[in-house]
Length: 344
Ligand code: AMP
Ligand code: MG
Image (cartoon, rainbow, N blue to C red):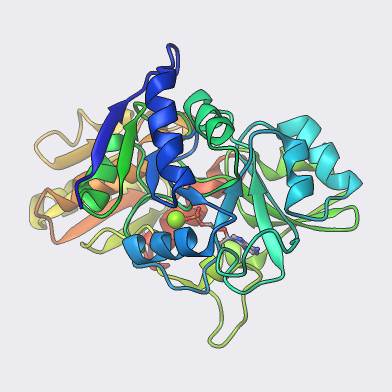
């Protein structure tokens, strides 16, 4: 298949390019598009044939459901049974990086939801994504636009690497601002169950919901045969091809370990900016300053992809903190590392 490329700047949207891409969606094709979180691989969420193409292009297991992207929070009414808590969350966080799981209506085929009777709904804030959804006139089912299991794409180059020749079009809208996928919550009365942490933090959710429960799968590996609340939790994810090891210890002990490792092992280090000079000579990827979790989030998936091109036997990175945006970083990194943490 010949993949068409469109460059669309969020600040000066080319509506004729948006129309061309919307025509592809309307005719059941696949378009990769930028969002504020990561790039999505979009198809008409009301068409079973279109959804099946997403699973095929990504090599995604058919029981791992897709998130549907809508133009306005109220549009969820057409596809899901909403609740007062949904609207309270929508008022606080939509458009933005929050996905809410709701009971599904029949307008969404079961192929989109991996056979579940619930549907994940999100209203993105990226202007290109919003223009595409509005011009398509349908909700857009879109998982991350990477090959299943590899790090999510945060630039059009990442998408091209994984999807060129497999999908109808790629919209290049520059680098994603957040860099980690949306926060996912399931609602239970006045309680929100956090299934995937993201830029909308547990504390922020706590300002709207009476109770926020963090699913244990966010930080821990599932037990064998455990049935996850979200099917995506059980799959290997975000993984670079070289093994990733997360380092846990004091600043000084980690520095000592990295100095020694860089002299004796063929390793790549995802380092903090503050460490770059001291570790110069090693294969380094600077992920941002120690306290700048936003930059670390924005750079993480690109860093994992880059590390894979550097011919190392092992990748070392810092174990992130568990609070605020740290929890989202922790969740992605612990899975990318297959839960390998080294105490130093
Ligand atoms: P991705 O599209 O790659 O960001 O992955 C979407 C995530 O949302 C996966 O982890 C899915 O398992 C999860 N998800 C989507 N729909 C549902 C649903 N109805 N119930 C629970 N989890 C869902
Ligand atoms: Mg994904």
